[in-house]
Length: 155
View: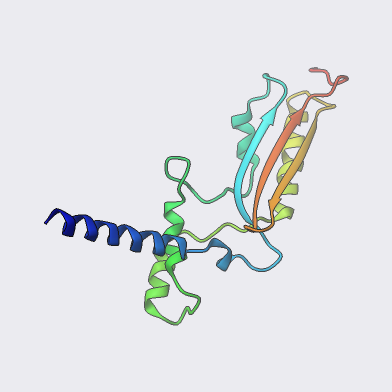
């Protein structure tokens, strides 16, 4: 009896792994575009509240559970490419669509952060945007650095 229970659990685990591994994120990412994986804001000055600066970001990546697994996106990935089938529409409706990285929105966020930092009194501060693309997975990470330059002064 124990062997039967163990083999059924092993079979269930194998099926679950096959279903999860078959859910490719890149299937829903158009060619030449990237999935937004992570956005972070860093500052070299402790006087600038990074939490406030995150409010200027216009694109946020898909939500993750326990900072590891993108569970809300999983039902969307289970759907097929044919949108005329009910089951595919159902999975797309309950799932979260992948967020495609838009460089125009990232540059607009950079300009808005730069204006906000200058509004705080850091007139010579600079906001740098760094993109890190992983081409094989078609995923990108975006980092924003707030730098207070040597000649920057708080008025």
